[in-house]
Image (cartoon, rainbow, N blue to C red):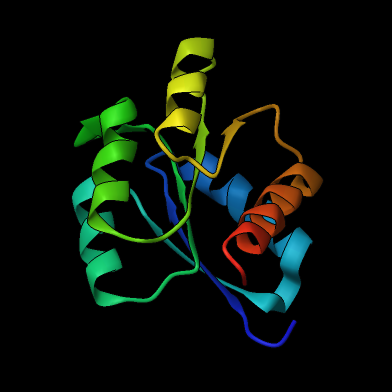
Length: 128
C-alpha cells in the first residue's frame, strides 16, 4: 500500500472504539492512520480541518442520534462513510444505504476481516 489510509472513527463508547482500533490494526498494521472522536460536533470540526479517506460512524452519539447523524455528516463532506453501530433495525439499514452509506456494519457481528473488506471495498468504489 503506497499511502496510509486515513480513517476517522466517530464512536462514543471507549470499549467499542478500542475494539475497532484493534481490528483496524490487525487488518492494516502500519498502513493506516486512525483518529477517533466521541462527539458529532468534534467529527465535523475534524473533517473540516483534515483530509480523511473514510469515516467509520456510530449512529448513537451524545450530541446526535439516528440516521440524521449520518445524513448531516455526509452533507458536510465528500468522504465515504461506513456506519458502525449497534442498531440492527432493517429499515434503518435500508434507509442508510439508500441515503449513501458505503456500508453498514453491526457491532458484535463484525470481524476484523469483515471490517477490512468493507474498508477496501469502499475505497475501491471511490477509486483509491
